[in-house]
Length: 215
Image 1 (tube, rainbow, N blue to C red):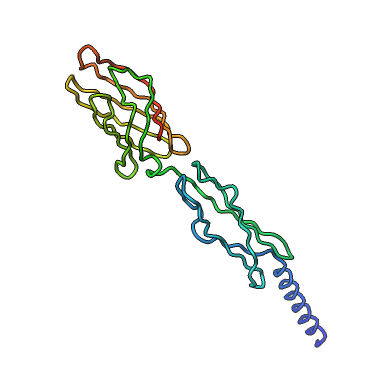
Image 2 (cartoon, rainbow, N blue to C red; image 1 turned 90 degrees about the vertical axis):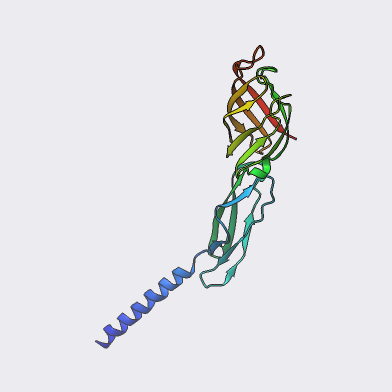
């Protein structure tokens, strides 16, 4: 009976020792600090919050961060990869870094080139874009000679000029538009629809495309 009890205790001890030994033979565990995913603006400098790593015995392991894939000059989703290793293996973990166009990117002076009518929809070639709300852009002196204001909302790379009216001495110019912004937030290509048919002789109805480039 004593022998059986001894054998049982010995077996249990061996099992516990085996499990403990097996459990310890693992690579480090990495913990990412800060936000994951992280969000930064095009043109900004990315400051990585880093990561920590712990070995199974609770000692600290060294973490190497690879930031080479992150490109803040253009919008997109990128990854920072963290690596930590010990004698039992290597651990890897990634942080997503989303680089986005924000209002600060598209406020400023613009040059405008278009195939629009110089009389029915005479867009001003020099535009100054100022903030409109939290996600919009406003252009003053939008039409050559007669001025007027145009506003656009921007969502990601999509630019929308909702239907709006500029009143002139000759009559109203009604227009809307939609287009896209490039990945660096410096150029917009917009297709406008306009109706200035109220203006005698020079007015009309049509559509045209404008390229609006930040200076």
